[in-house]
Length: 324
Image (spheres, rainbow, N blue to C red):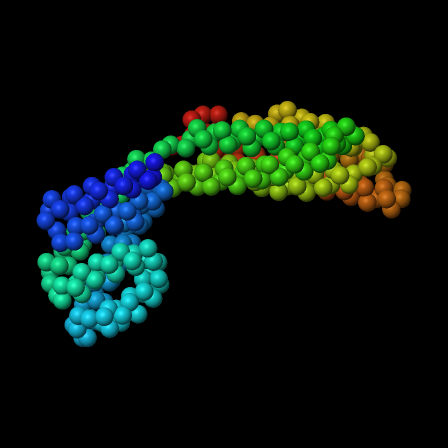
């Protein structure tokens, strides 16, 4: 898609430049080729910085060419001054384009108003055509929803797997594989969500990016919980272990985008109450196991809190059509 868009933009830019009888019309095509980006927002930024870059380049070229003449040494001095200033002004993308347009002044041996106007018109046409083309971007909402479903389903399986492992029925290696899978899925999902945000020019809300960030933070917690589950073998506190097992199972069954986490918070409070009422540890090993159980419960509390806070922030959007 981008290849076709780039080819069409370059051809259209050259045709427009030729229609207006501009000098070096092919430069407009090259500028269009370099200005086609992946997102709407980046295309606007590219156009803005290239215009600012050409203004700076023209001013520096005017000084260098008038002082040193229109030859290679003057162009070299121009680059020595222009490149550091452009980098400092975060106009790096404009360096090649502006410098190519400056060579038009160099070859002509003149920096008249007509040549300067010609250079800016070439830039406006090339960047403008690319900008218009970049306004037509595909909507990634359905793609993001599929990634969202994949991430959530994997986390559900992981929670169930940890619950089964606590009950002596699961496989710790399966939980490890699920963790690896969800980490990779989240990485790809966040990239797609950022691209979607970059294509929304007039909205600061980033539902999907915030959602995947929340899930990534939850997965970081699940990594710690998974390790603690592997280290838990407390027969003396079977009641507490069973409570945690049931809590993880409940979390797996109710896990969804729409869950506000409040019911899980109530279930967590019951588990914490049973933990506090449990008999005190009598040996060092029991004490260490009790500490691991407490850490496991505490991590799960953080896990729930992340979803509750997210739900409060996006309560109006959860379960409804997401922002475009």
